[in-house]
Amino acid sequence: MKQRTVYMFIFLVLFIGVASHAQYQSSITEELYGYVLGIEGSDIAKRKAFILDQLQALGIGYVVAPFREVFVQRNDSTKKADTLIIRGENIIARVGTGFKKIVLGAHYDVYEGSPGANDNGSGVAVALGLLKYFRDREMKHSLEVCFFDKEEQGLWGSMNYIKNFAIGAKHLAYINIDVVGAGNEIFIGPIGGGDDANLMPIVREAMRKLPFKYVERSEYPYSDYVPFAAVKLENISISVVPEGDADKLIQYERARGMTDTLSTSPRLLSIIHTPEDRATYVSPHSLKLAFEFVREIVEILNVRR
Ligand SMILES: [Zn+2]
Image 1: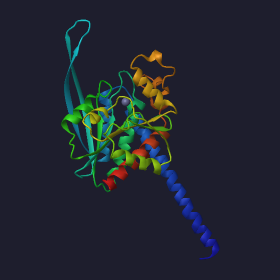
Image 2 (image 1 turned 90 degrees about the vertical axis):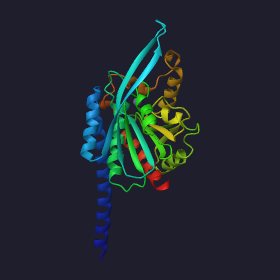
Image 3 (image 1 turned 180 degrees about the vertical axis):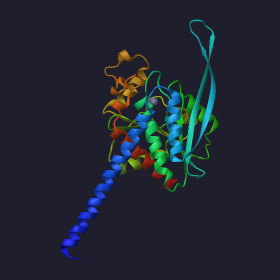
Image 4 (image 1 turned 60 degrees about the vertical axis):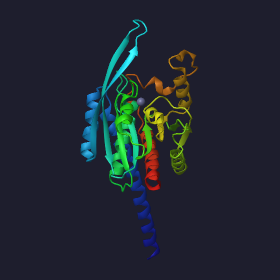
């Protein structure tokens, strides 16, 4: 080849490389943000319908698993027992047919009156993006994605899943994705406690591969990982938070209502669980961080175990 032809060739290869990378960057962030726009809103029936529409469009198999739980609570003023009936529907989608299961979870219900774009439309968006991604990949293990209901009222959906669907011999890992739509630090927890000894080395391998900002803590706010932890199934939870919020969220959780003792509140709490939790405050960049990080963990798990 003439020198000019060689230069032209090198230029073309570089151009195509940069262009396709840029294309990937914009298409994945747009796709994830589009899911947040689609699910945003406090009407739970509409949120459920949105997820089912997406799964059907993607050609991904799923079941809708309704549940009914009875909760008896002692009423301190009447000294009588109040009976609460909790109804909900988990949506469980799956790609791959392997015996062992990698389980991802993102609750789709909302705190009453909140449009739940970040909490937890962001987690649902990332879970949908991952289903689409792994649908087209060779899977050694099954990837089961749970869209849990009634997390906000007390983890009822994930507790029901543990009762009816979890099988220890099949379980490889549970990765809980909750609130990943704002900030640029990936908050991972709760670490230790005897239920992540196999999973954490893989999580750390993904951390080494992807140079994002990480905060690992032994505590993590109350979320759908708890029922998994209670039966010692390997699990970890992931959020994307504004800088400094991980420790503030832990402090807030410890204070449990006695929030006037806190010097500073987590920035996230000025938005989530309020009518302000709208897509306007969700960052496509944060969604992409969570997507790439969880994708990396699943990819390592899929070849390794
Ligand atoms: Zn949540």
